[in-house]
Length: 255
Length: 242
Image 1 (tube, helix red, strand yellow):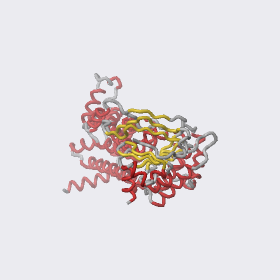
Image 2 (spheres, chains in turn purple, red; image 1 turned 135 degrees about the vertical axis):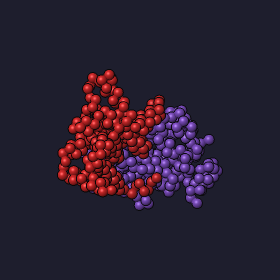
Image 3 (cartoon, helix red, strand yellow; image 1 turned 60 degrees about the vertical axis):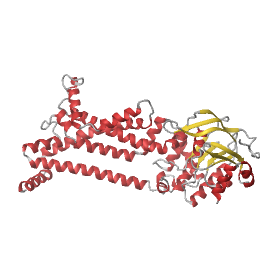
Image 4 (cartoon, helix red, strand yellow; image 1 turned 180 degrees about the vertical axis):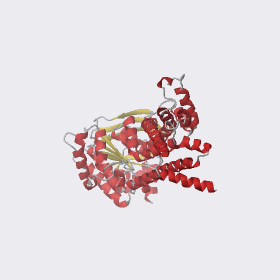
């Protein structure tokens, strides 16, 4: 039984991504049940943290939200025809200049190549990396590469950002930079006529969850065991009383 | 022993003096193998990149056949091409037997599985790594494989050089379909085999030394490419992950 103990401030905003009774199986013979009966509404302007032990299905859930994985059952809906960008733990830049990496991303999203140049330049300025535009993407530091990957996503003006542990492989300094950028993008004013940016991210870092999230979805073995506003998730008394598994997880992570 | 050192000395003389018979054979060898490699490479890279991302029933069987084809000896390829090109064979009308074209065809067929299999491996590994990100950006399967192949261009250049090394050093196929005709289809390996059996060791040794030099050069280029690529990828990310 999953109950929201309090109302998230964005609960009445329009739904931008929804899953209904979704099951996902992975493995060569689809023998691993990675997600079981997931029903989730993500509202415009929310920042949803997906937390849980390793292998609980966070990454699979993000990929399913994006539509990258086939579902064994259930439905996925994108009611507002939102544009979705996804970032992975590793930035996955190709062996070409930083500028070209961004242009390629825009071109793949359907922008004519001739228009990609200016937009790419703008995005690099947004993450303070315009001076590295001509460098080979793979030759940058991990933090710089992840900032380029963020710029590549930002250039697409996504309505929804899906981030799979975007700071997990970075050193503390780069972690801070990248997290600051994510927070910044989330509070950016949307283009006219568009909904405020929405975020869903997987994280192992409860400090980061506290700083970035408005809502926390706790997963274990492919099931959602708690779905709470962030302040309730960090209310140990409430967790003890109603969500024993989540409570045990938080205690384990903080001790 | 004395005759061996004499032969080496004469061989070096032949090479350095620019002996026309020797260098004509070297140039012909290089031309046959280069043409064959370019043909097989343009087809093999596309085929390998496609196989890396394509999912169809029987794919496992195709990969097994490809790997088996990889192990087929050059003489068997030569025999098959001989039968294809012989007067009564399906390609007999081309009149290619014992010609430059026949040798190119045989060597192309010899290195095609090598290029295809290595490309498939390189592209599939890289696609496992970057494929999802490219898909999330909107790339379809075919575009994804081409982008990944482009991203692995240095590795694929190594594949080309490996293929060339295999082609230039094989003897069985060119011997059968080329016929080792003096001044026409005689290449380094077939000439070495013939001259050795005739007892003309200096020419055989001279060609052997040139062949050794070519293979050494190819391997040095591969090593340099690898080092260059590692320098290009000099970010600290690879250390942080895996």
